[in-house]
Length: 237
Image (cartoon, rainbow, N blue to C red):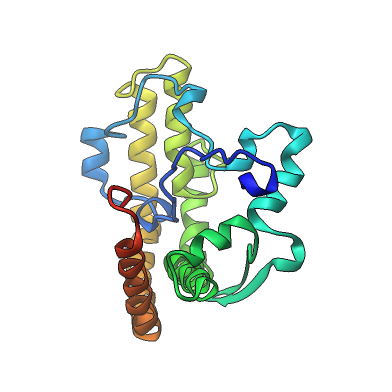
């Protein structure tokens, strides 16, 4: 980056996030909900400093951002499109980013392709399950049930913790009546709709199928990472 006239500004590392089926398809454990509600729900309002920037370019002044991004990731002509489970993914194929990868991987573009596939496997499995007719019907039954309990705008169980957090932000205790009633309603509707009971076995089936189809690729990807770690200077692993 210095050769291209920029000071590299490392972004704060943010752990990658992936779709969690346990959140998407919620809980159907009514007894647990009745006793514990939303266990671990914080009553402290988050601050902006709790979420560091995950993008190095976001730390650069607007006037310099385009040039900085081009130096770091290359131009649109450098972009590479990979086939991944469920579709296509476009990743940077040039700039100092790929130049740095060349010091760690024999074939950096192959690494990027394999990384794209591996990190999308779980999300693709969940997307497949979400389109299953039985799961779609269960979601509709869940929504109808929650609407009858006063939550007409609710679409899916993973929205429920946010509603609970909003109640807490308005002054309700995390174990207050409205929060606990919401937890019980959510679990009851999930159980009665059979949402989690239908969806989670299908997630397991799709994960197993993906494992069979992409197992060799995942193994090779892990070997790439191990080899890259061995090339890092001492103290940087």
